[in-house]
Length: 264
Image (cartoon, rainbow, N blue to C red; front, side):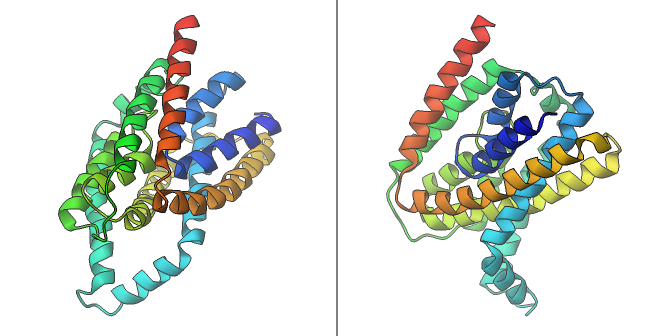
């Protein structure tokens, strides 16, 4: 993989993991436009490295929240912190179950499936538009909400459905505070990312070539830095109800992707 390609794909992953425009969909579009002909194993390794970078950027941005949650949980009382962690665990169940059960089916949807990405981006646009029009509240995410948001996260495994867009929109449409919805959305994915990385590493399916070390490292740095910026920016945008701009963007890119796939 070329260095410039690694930088571009790293920035795409870092920005789109947090901005509600689908990181998986944009990575597929980016690979198609850059003419990425990597072997599946090499492409998987690069994807794992980029997801690891964005998981770390989430931890950096929410380091105080995570530390407070750990401190609260270590009191071994059914306090707000332990309840929040329990909600995170509950939200992971749908994605973990569906991802494990239908892993091969989801894998087949990736790989230059640009038309599908286009249609899913349009669905993401609709979700964002509806969420942006929802009324502001002070409501916290409940246990039942956490489970529903978890199903939204599972559906976001489809390329083109934004994970952050789907989970934040679902949470807001359930009547939750927008800032709390964004915080829950970003924190709930961290355990899943590390779990998926561990599974991929232990599976033995990753193929490492020392010649790609530089590209992998630069891609990691690009995703990590852009991820910190995007995560911080996204929290402010959700609070100010600016998701409609991303809805318009997703709709436009979705249409372009569909037209591109039909012409090629």
